[in-house]
Image 1 (tube, rainbow, N blue to C red):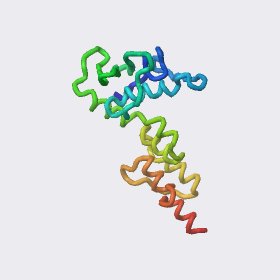
Image 2: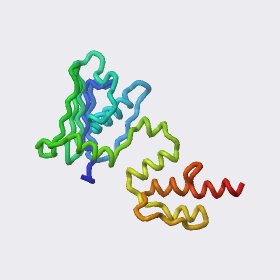
Image 3: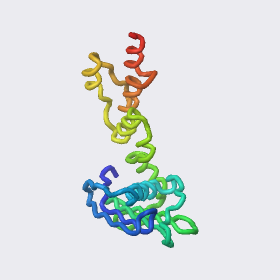
Image 4: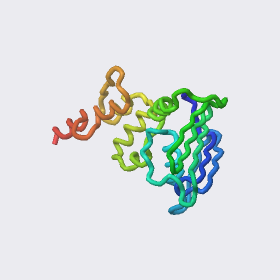
Length: 186
């Protein structure tokens, strides 16, 4: 569904988190705290759960002293729950009415590919790559008018070209049309 929103997040025994309950009800939330308070653990819990089996394997997902880690993410239309124990992980995806989803990993792959990004990889990438990622996820149309305003001439988008592809073609390092024009002009 395109209307998925974080309704509720429940985390226990995961990394630095003993227990956490967030009742977001689709609203924006702010995660704040001092160093080592567990802010990154919250992001990792969301990422590892929503990505399901596609998430990178975590070295120590279970909090020290806990027997298991559990994360439950209520997205309104579906609920994704993941449990880590010494014997492995378990992923359960159900519809809002509680009925099981037939192929949960395929659903999560589709959801993850459309709406999410790896927050750590995103923060470590170049600003222009961050822009391309956000444009891709948000499915924003190529900003032809804005580029024309900045460049002083229109560079039309190609049929079916995404905003990210357009920006790379027009402005990309060492390859973009505007970059090459500026380089050639000295």
